[in-house]
Length: 354
Image (cartoon, rainbow, N blue to C red; front, side):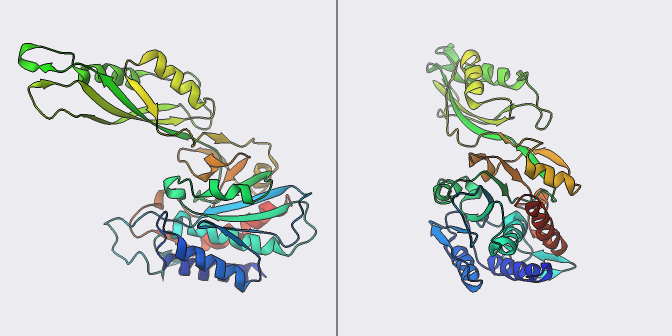
């Protein structure tokens, strides 16, 4: 198929996906659409949960493999929409609709790229494709569920809207629940120990602390307190307990264990991470995939947001058509030219390797 034919197929598929609600954990119908698309093109595929995956026709277990991945779930539309989020609308070179930018444009561009290489029997690498579920909520039934079925993967491209620039590093995310202790008492008699004051002492340390190792790509690792509450609702009772939440954004120079150790040494409050799955990741600048992008004139940067890249135990490059600033916004859209550029760019990059 020519690039124009691939582009036409990709846009048609994206319109079908936009027209079909696919909120996280509710991706069954878009999974059916993707399966029908692969059937139409005589591509063997498999399904695990709401994840769809396929391998190139001449897949060889003795060859290394590259993964092409993006997600087909979306967030729910916000109240600011003036257009029907489930009606794909072409207007002024744009395609409007929920999930068009995040990450439908990337998804269909990678599918078109997979189609381009599917029947090639002379590649040095296997080309594997996966459309994952639950990315928007970092769910356990998304990419983690399907990875064991993909065979050995050496490296991959994760499709997210980056203006087709290369996100070579990505911040890790850890959410920590904290509980400051105290002792109840009557406020008028200055009884008890105020857990709220103890929490404030810890919060002040968090506010002023700076981790010394600063990344050239991702800057500082950051601690931000985002929630605070006490169970006590009476004005005259000293609270015996105060809970607060820390949002932790970690650069590639720190492990979660190192962050937790710093908190252990400096906080009086008890704390527990909700999860340590979303680790910071990076891919070497001399990796063949990055060098392929540089050869095409692409720049690179460190991404402040997290994606399925954080859950992959092999080097990955986050890159795709569209703009992250449009993600989760009302009247979401992607430029049609961005999809065409995405297909052409992906094919040129992968061709340098496989």
